[in-house]
Image (cartoon, rainbow, N blue to C red; front, side, top):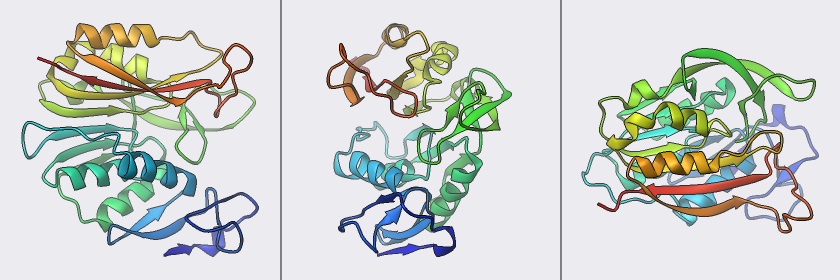
Length: 262
């Protein structure tokens, strides 16, 4: 059952939850509430919820086997908190550090963690980066916001950034998730010496047509840290030699699952 917060309702862009498009359709970027796993879930963008629900709770793409009942999980790019809910369903005693750069989305993240009554979850309203800084951030409204230099196009704001490296140093991490819309290479490169303390590493790789691709550099770093990897497509072109359509400025997204075999 979804409740639409009507004062924010601005048609005509709609996404559905199990119903035909019509009066019960939910517009993108319209704040809504939904009962999820017996708790109230606060949603900022229905498309982001639908994608996370499918990937995390239907496909269980983050499923992993921890070596202890209370694993340490670091979640970079937590969005509205679906990943935290999934991790806590998988390991109720997990301790989680979660980063979300967009202050608007961070408000939904906070309310959802409170709604589900989770303990041992630290929420940080900062973007992970290779240093502590304040940088420009392009706002997408769903899950695509990212650090980016300002141009004449798009809506931008300033976000506070933090080095991820200091959160990894000296800490045993069972699962590190990095889904930060194009900043993954800078962060991984900066954290290169700390990856040895991580059991499982998930990276969503993002390619931009106006930037040099660095997938090979990322894979070299994770291999050097002792990981093997498995790659699945997240957003790809059907005919790459003919056209490469963009998804909010990205021409390729790949899910990289890194694990240690020894």
